[in-house]
Length: 72
Image (cartoon, rainbow, N blue to C red; front, side, top):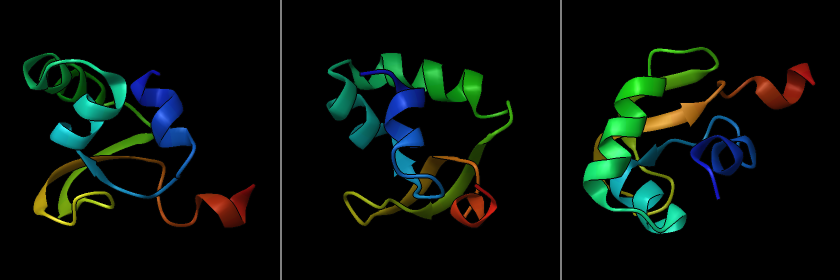
C-alpha cells in the first residue's frame, strides 16, 4: 500500500513515520525519506501531532485537513 492511498482512506488523521512504515511494509529510514519529500506538497500536511494509530505525540503526516470530508 502506498502512503498516499493509506492517508486518503483517513483524511485529516495524522500518522507518524513509524506507523506508516509498518503499514506500508518498509523500513523507518525509507519512510522518513518519503514523508520528508511529500510533507511539503499539497494536500499533505506535516505537523507535530498525536498519531491516530499509536497515540504518541510526534511528527506526523496527514492528507488534507479535518474539513476534507465536509468539502466532498
